[in-house]
Length: 178
Image (cartoon, rainbow, N blue to C red; front, top):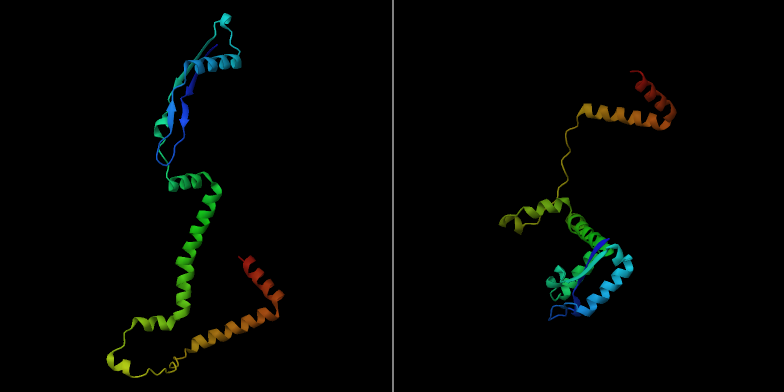
């Protein structure tokens, strides 16, 4: 059996606001103790020709650890928490609905459709001095075909309400007649 074990340097001081973390290589005594521990764990037998090597190396993370600011710590905590991410996304969605849905709808309801068009027009100086008089709309020309179509629609609607079973049978027969 052949095994190799790599251990990281020992952390001597944690990173603080002003200083980076400090790491120190392990002593020869620590490496002997770790070797004995690893040999016991794997069932090492020298008579069998087993080899076990324990090495102390500085891991890549040791060099990259710089002091982390408070916003950086908060961001790291938020990234690691799926609950915070979920609620932040829900809050962002709610703000978008309010900003792009509710606010324009309230503004439209407050102004009204006729006031919105009137706000765009700038009255002349002569018109501004005189009060505006609202007149009722002029009656539109009545189309006889449209009146007849409306009467037929009302008759059919009334029949459907009075005789729903007969109407549904009629519709079924029309559908199945093809």
